[in-house]
Image 1 (cartoon, rainbow, N blue to C red):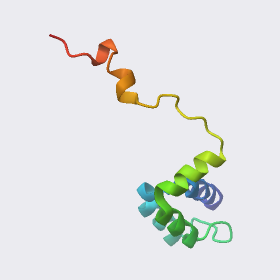
Image 2 (spheres, rainbow, N blue to C red; image 1 turned 30 degrees about the vertical axis):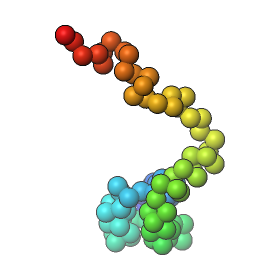
Image 3 (cartoon, rainbow, N blue to C red; image 1 turned 180 degrees about the horizontal axis):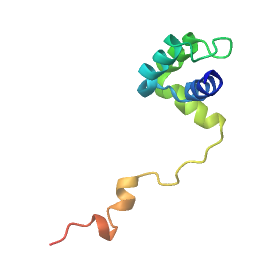
Length: 85
């Protein structure tokens, strides 16, 4: 379905979709993306921008931080992560 695939690819652009690049390219090859809505060069640009684009998109969405600045330090005292003797 072109409409659904186009929406999915458009959403993935926010997240520098390197992991989905092969599938996105296949969708374009199979004409499953409405190129009036999403152009392949936008996909390529998103991937090229990498982590910085992803961070900008998160900031734009106003997602709060996880609240745990150092996950390892936080979890090391938890009983399930202690080495048993």
